[in-house]
Image (cartoon, rainbow, N blue to C red; front, side, top):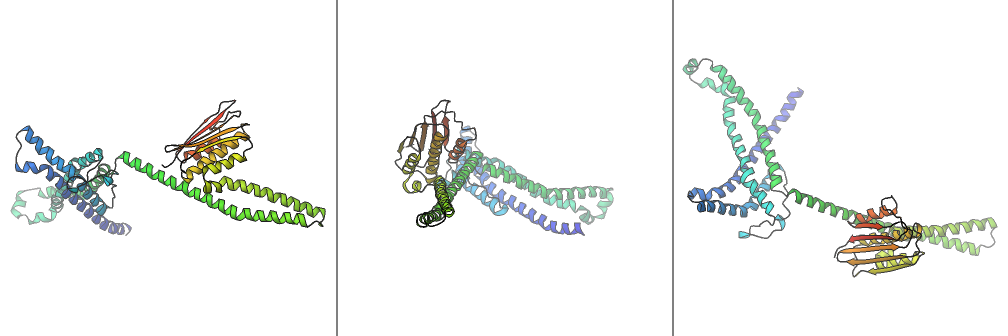
Length: 421
């Protein structure tokens, strides 16, 4: 019962798939006939006798086929999409090319045209020929598979004159049944071969697919970076306008209590003093945290003002030079800010520098950031320190990061960030 139910479910699917494959092959034959008719049209009217006539009979139809190739390719893509649900992408150059003869678009990519011609003149006709042979085999195979039934319609005299015909009819019937069982598989194989060939020859080339994939990944990464930067700004605003303001209010109240409540016991006053000091330290730490997430001055006044604030907070002299005719994107600004801030922090904490130079300038479509200090040197970006994090941050926007830090100094950190013109 289980196998019978399975066969009942499988039979309609097999018939439906066979009808779909047959319709697909017949439609492909009609489209391929158009391409072959273009190439064969001169030979239908005259037989070229000279080399010049043969050349004309080949070159002129080929030129017409080159012009008509985009239309034929569009028809093939439509056939694959409507009958099989296979969407063959259009080559990138084909969607933006100028109009050719009679308003028919011409491709800017010669390889795309040659691949299309290869499909319309060679691969497509061969697959169509296989489809024709497959379709033509159905009738003799059906006749052979039913030979045991219709052989009794043959006159009795013929059957008596041909001894052993029943054995021959049995072989023919078995052969016909085998061919009938193989024809659906053959049709399905031809359809799959046509899909593979059309995807390779009518769609984008592997180089175009790779370029399109890289572009999609670049756009996705840019979207992720923008979303992360937006989220950092939201967290900075929430901390600044929420928790930080509450801590400031708490510190003010504790300060007022400390100044006004003079008659409290010494132990209570010591607790208020300790709470007041902890509140002020929490405010300072929270301010550093907020500034590390995304400083408000960077968003409001730009990179020059933000770096000036950073240089003012550093306990060593910093010579700052910023030359930006226009503001880069917020993401690039944030990366440049954190690079300079981290580099100056490292110069103070690890390099024991007595001074630093920061240069930020825009050269064409590149934002150049150079941070140099006169410290002890020996910085290594591959040692898992904060420099490796800076290198990853710079790489996230397709920038370049390099460090020159011989032992004994000086240390020069160079960053190049791409920015839109």
